[in-house]
Image (cartoon, rainbow, N blue to C red; front, side, top):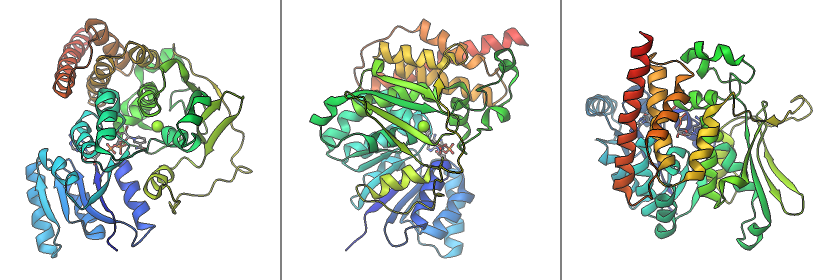
Length: 395
Ligand code: NAD
Ligand code: MG
């Protein structure tokens, strides 16, 4: 029997590497059809050496040439493709059954959408694609006839706590997303403006890529996750709550009409939700440590503070407004986070940039993919103007 073909979009990133670790813990269970990355040819070469994919994609053409040369020298028969279009081509290959969508940011939208349209089982880590184009992506999943299994730990937890039967879902009252609170949960608010990129990326519980680490520090990550949950589980934003839980052991909860609350627990290790999604509906080994509640220490829960974390308020407002506003929020945030990571803005400017761009951009009904891409480009341009104004004012 031939093994299901798997494509990992964003193989060299934090989620991509964890996915390959889960595959290594389950030898002979999956076949890697393609691994993709932006330009990290060194890491992609090592991954090709170990996992022997049929195809490797690097968006950057020079990096693809380097990879191609090294693979040929090493006698590894992986075929190298380059350019953005190749990301779409590999998910459409007929031997592919599953696609791990783990590119960071809006760059993940087109290949993720292509995987949904082609009816692949979509393991979705790239939350930004749902935030930008939730309606289009969910529609593509339905039309394509594949399934979507969430990888984001909170959404994977909720997926596990929800009944499979649609009718039984009527008994759900509320979804409760847990949030670690990030590295600045107890930092005095006056000190936040001086926080550096390295401090913002030093997450107390999770090792992740830099963009999502900054999003966790501003709690925009939780805001994006509210929007993600609304699309994934067909919930209005008023019924998605956030609760701070610094230990990151309870990954999220579902509250039912009868007062029951179901939660999924585990060590904070992305290999668990990844293994859940790869094995689903069966269970497979993840390589993550076992949870020992007797030694884990007390589990705390507290309300999330939107004054300390204005990005959470902005995302909630964008979720309520709907239409193109979540895409505007996402694009302005990506531009502001990139500027912060480059040392061009202060940490607290991220929320200010997003707020100004949202205020200057009226929400519209989403018409098409082209419309969303145009809204995304315009919001990035507006954000660049705000960022220039802020850094000019400070210089
Ligand atoms: P990362 O920065 O570590 O890795 C990103 C990957 O995407 C890399 O392989 C990179 O080469 C590729 N990439 C970047 N820009 C690209 C572009 N323009 N075109 C094609 N490929 C590109 O990111 P990550 O932390 O692994 O996060 C990936 C996604 O998963 C994000 O959407 C994030 O929100 C989500 N997520 C991550 C975690 C986590 O623990 N890291 C948890 C939940 C959700
Ligand atoms: Mg998450």
